[in-house]
Length: 314
Image (cartoon, rainbow, N blue to C red; front, top):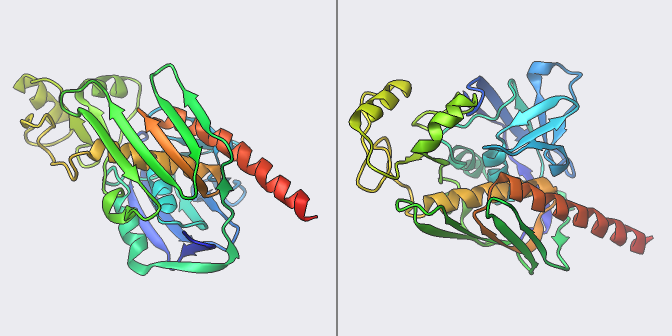
């Protein structure tokens, strides 16, 4: 567990398209001074546009991704990038975008983690401020999601998913303070069920979605004519349903890749607490909505805790 804050050693550039907007975006992630935190800059909006802190206070939407909005400046679908920063213990960084959405790349955090890990991190002369839980925090929602965060000496996450799917089944994934994030969590891609694609297109989402940035789960056999139609939409020659129940464009990186990706999302959304956490997270069917709800409560606890410590020191 790191005692001091860390930032990046170099500047890293990424280009791609936004998952939901479909816009091409150029993004730079660079080092930042101690106590800066993670902040986003929209270069396309001019110098007068405010920086947007990666903070749950600014979460404005959680449908199929996490969106920040500060004074009309929005940043969409930041959870994979934020998961990489949090999972690699990077406290301070400036992220500059020339569009509203973080590029989806391959649907995982692997491109970010590979780039950041190549050069290592730079330790800074400032202590990390941990949120040390002194009580459990519990949340349940109408979608059947449940999450509890318990006091602990280290940060860990247990994720369980069950969508009553014969393909995905019940899956479990775990992250501990000594987990190799770069190898074990970062490569895990977002996923979608085939029957969800049409409604997402209808609601003007996933404009940038393609078969390079998601696993597509096909619960039941589909007529080849329908798969051929989808192949045309995604501009590939041919699609098939493989025996494992996924479209034939890719193969699983882990047998429990879906659960590991949900864990990545928890890391990304919990990074918006603004402080590293000492606590044990247990999540069932987690999603951005419940992640953000818990993150808000944790941030409130953190601010109260730090205020109390400050008063005691005066």
